[in-house]
Amino acid sequence: MRSIVIGGGHLAYFTITTLREIDPEGKIVVIEFTSEKVEMVKKTFPYTETLLSSIDKVEEYITSNRSLIDALVSATESDALNLKYAKHSIINEIPIVITVLNNPLNEPIFIKEKIKYIINPYKTIGPKVKEIVNKFRVNKIYEFSRFDGGIYAFKIENAETLHKIRSFILKKDLPFFTVSIDNKIKSSTLENIELGDTVYVACSDKDIKDLLEKIGGEKK
Amino acid sequence: MTPEEYSLILRIVFAVLSIILSVFLGSKLRDIIIENLSKFGHAFASKFAEILRYFLMILGAVIAFSILSLDVIILTAISIGIFIVVLISMREIFSNYAGEIYVRIRRPFSEGDFIKIGEFTGRVLSINSQDVELVSIEGERIIIPNQVFLKHPVINKSSTMPTSIELKITIKDSEPEKVEETITEVLNEIRPELFEDPRITSITRTDDKTEVNLLLHIVNQRKMKWIINKLSGEFHKKGVEIEIE
Image 1 (cartoon, rainbow over the protein chains, first blue to last red):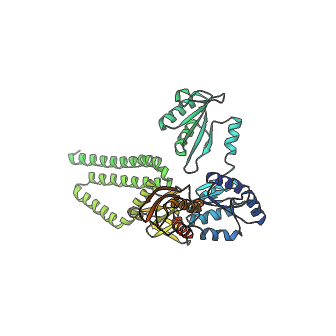
Image 2: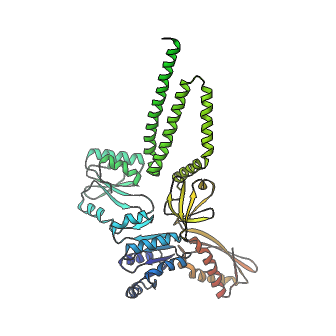
Image 3: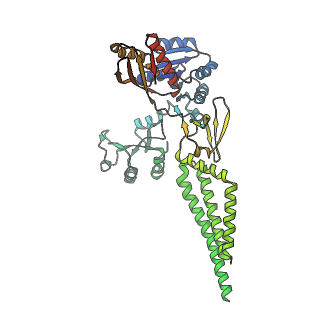
């Protein structure tokens, strides 16, 4: 698979490493704007093809190689450039266009511009803090990238929540597992859920909306 | 009170009840529709619910007039006539609404996807009640009436699933024992462009030729032409003449 990574900073570092991991035989082309970073990328990732380009020439490169590029990741240190390149890639029918955010507050702009795959590296901070401190009612542990859904954690604090979670899982026939108060993973039966447990449920955002309203949990 | 007066009062009461019932049912139906169709977009659900509400109200009014009128047949005929004229004069608009319902419910694509419909290709900017707005590679804005989506197949090019391609390569005047080795070497040259390792599914040898079936997985379907050219070029470099189907 031919992947193009635009940018040579730390966002690109993790992107290149992952692309190499998922397709060790694939071709990775890194486009950077400064010669120092290009040299650094060459040394760090000798298996990549590295291009030194001016900011304005990247779009030209995408257009001229559009029939060969399978995936493009815009991971520069500027969200404005990331948006510009992602939009240009979509127009040029690149099958997979991913952008990595620098500032999480810019996410709505990317959504508004119909960029489908947005990686917000800061999104895990909230759920992680909640999980570590272990104080939450509802926590969106994982967000699926290809459709609107995720894995939600519910802390069973009272009998009413327990009843509602059980009914919800039963009604929607959802996959779930439970972690007990002493951090042991329990077998997945509805009868085994007890007060103090944390229930992890995989479901679509649409399904979860009604439940959150019913149990009065925070919507993340 | 004469029987005629009594009958008139009764008809007025029933006519008023008919209008009240249609307004009540229309409002209830609107709420139910908005609640159930909001997953397809709130604006779409509201609009659809409003159309049905007005339809019920008009129906209630027609029934009320029918109850009041002495000549029900004439009134019904006029109503049907008006309905048919409206339907014919606005058939394009209704057809576009039907197209919108199809696009919203079937979801062949969503905003941001890259699609091909008929001779037009572009990224979907917005899905509206009457049309879908695309922007082409050249940056032109293309407005496609929704009814077109009912009549023509849509190709959604935004899918990220790799496509499996089967290729049949016929190698003439080859040494059978070297064929597999040559193919493996050539496939290694194109491997970085593929989604995963290519597979030789079969090798059939006849008197003067060898037929090799390959299975390749690619993400960007436009890469196919490049791959065929590359395969031909690589075989040619090794002095092997081939035919690809």
